[in-house]
Picture 1 (cartoon, helix red, strand yellow):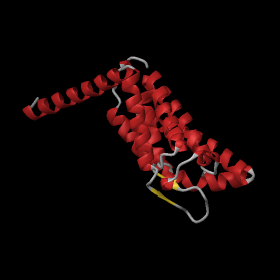
Picture 2 (cartoon, rainbow, N blue to C red):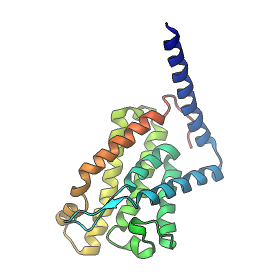
Picture 3 (spheres, one colour):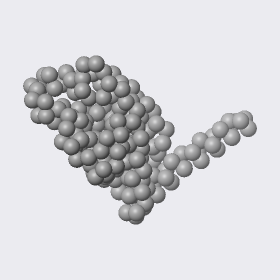
Picture 4 (tube, rainbow, N blue to C red):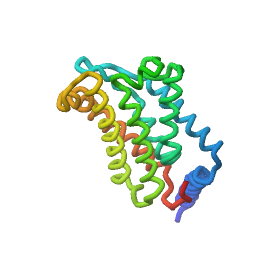
Length: 208
């Protein structure tokens, strides 16, 4: 084996060890450290919420929030990933203007996009549960499948509330609240899956 190959192998081993050490640390950390991570992902969600654009045929904007949601479950696990999105919703409802378009207030949770915010919590919980509990789910196909499941959960929550708020039937609510976003959300899931593959350790780490 050449010196270059030995050097590359050494870097790879150190990288794998660093990944495992971080997730082992995260898993065994106390409440304060995990809360800090949750607040950090809540802030990331709020930042990415400002990356938005509207399509001409739906009142629901395309935003970057889903990307943060998908990664929150991967990086900080089921309970604190879900907590990060719960904090995002609660702090925004309390008045911090970090919902899409710099909005805030409890009316957002009750409005046409409120269901998606609730879906963020459920999606992060589900993704984190699979990532923490099932080492075999950490293949590219497994991660992508779980990401898509998380997106489906977000759609379900979002579409149900959209239909209730606007008085739409199921078909119209799906047409406005899910179908326009499938392509871009698949793209987000692919990027998030690639990042997850790069940061998740191959070895098991302690459960939360």
